[in-house]
Amino acid sequence: MKNTLIILVFAVVLMLLNVAVPAQTRLNSLNGGSVDVRAQRGKVVVLAVGASWLPLSSKQAEFTNVLAKKYSGKTVIVYFIATDSANPKSKNYATDEKLKQWAAANSLTVEVLRDPEGEVITKTFSLDQLPAFIVLDKNGNQAGDAFTGIDPKFDITVPISKRIDSLL
Image (cartoon, rainbow, N blue to C red; front, side, top):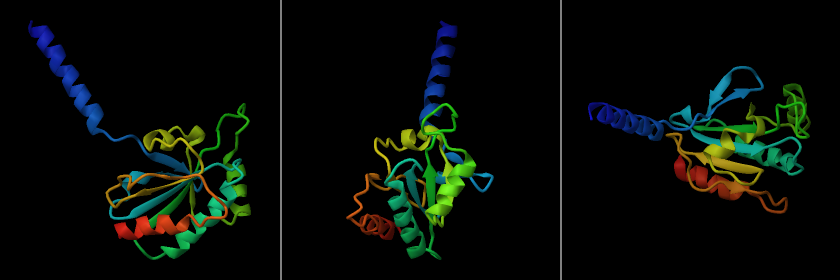
């Protein structure tokens, strides 16, 4: 009986720890080092989640630059999250160097973070479509639904800006 009680208490503690610990959101930067996108306390964080092989990611890079410029000097950080595969056998494989070249070719002005296969960001924020934009509040929590898909004829920075402005 005593062993059963100990096992039960241990199981409950493990479940509570699992619920209390937020998903890991630390990603490697193409500039070296790593960034925990949820740990930017006191700042609104915008995550542009895409991949170099997605045709609409070039338009996404353009929108990302618009947001970065608009909120420069404010308590807003914008990152581009590249979900390209790190597996050389994958058809969506890209080296860090190839991602740097893609970022330069698209004049991307924000820091690029790497999330191979989208294993961290797409699961943490339940994304089912790329490209996407996610806005995090000043406590690192997702602020509303992700903005998914990009219509090149629609300026997606307008609704994203409204969300950001509501958090400043």
